[in-house]
Length: 230
Image 1 (cartoon, one colour):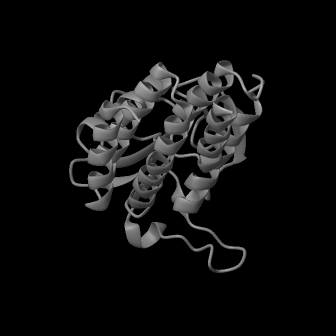
Image 2 (cartoon, one colour):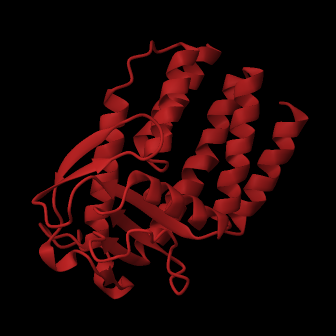
């Protein structure tokens, strides 16, 4: 295994051990790019495991923070995560744009905040929300709108914790996670590249830009890397 990737992954492992998930994620992405450039698909597949775990933990922290589903009453130029909130999830709706969603996500990463962002290409009062990608390939999925009581306001962690342990019920954070899952599933379904081809690796990587913490996308990317190694 190349020494440069070894050093990156040793540092990433240390970051994961001290629960610095954002640092681990960044180092894994660097190692992944190096492995891809070298055609080292065995190592590429191995790097995906800590990458997936760091992103899973980032998502969990975000869903334990504040949640905002709809942004009808926020200033149209608003593009920064609230300073008082260390983590959370937000679905931007009209009058905001994909560019605003992209800026919020980029700013959150620069500020080392665990923040998850989606964009719904509709007004927050719509009965069905069109969840649309703002990075990677153009992907859209349609989901039932969240409960009216959850829309267009900041929901504190006490209000957003998962309630799926109660049969048939869910909370705002659950709605957000389900929307992420649906968008990632649609992105994955559009991948047509052959199983053991570099084009499949590229297509799946682009899908992960749509939903960076989608579990099955990471698994399929690992399968594609192992197929190239064989």
